[in-house]
Length: 186
Image (tube, rainbow, N blue to C red):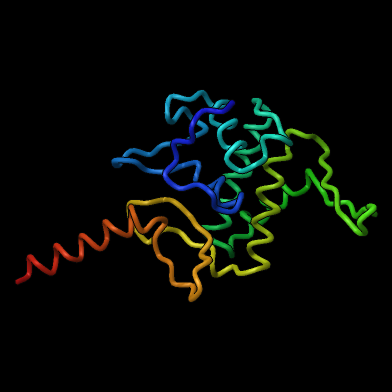
């Protein structure tokens, strides 16, 4: 059984959830895959696989972690600058390790994901999910508006105006800061 997930934001689509394995707490950068929360690197991977629902399909081991770190860097660069051709090439390089095979099942048409090496599975899944987010609503992939926050989210609000990773955390701090600034001016 995996340990508790120490990250402040979970439950985002897999691609963004992978980016959110790095966060800032009390001004200190933390990384789930580098010992945050007292976990070893592979334990952090196990926590992430469990939180994303991938633990039943993939193993938490050193090779999987290396590939996932490759995917995280590729996705971070692609999200930061979608026009960056080298970032797109990195995402494509991760995607080279898997494919979707059409199948015919008793229920009708289906799909099966195949990997040249199963340790690439979580990395490929995250990269594939990024493509799905881009196909659906690329403008809804957002970084938190707080200058001190590094988290990303998929804005599913009705009018598409979400600005904060969490209204309870970053959003509340911004509101409190604006209130303080207004009251100090008077």
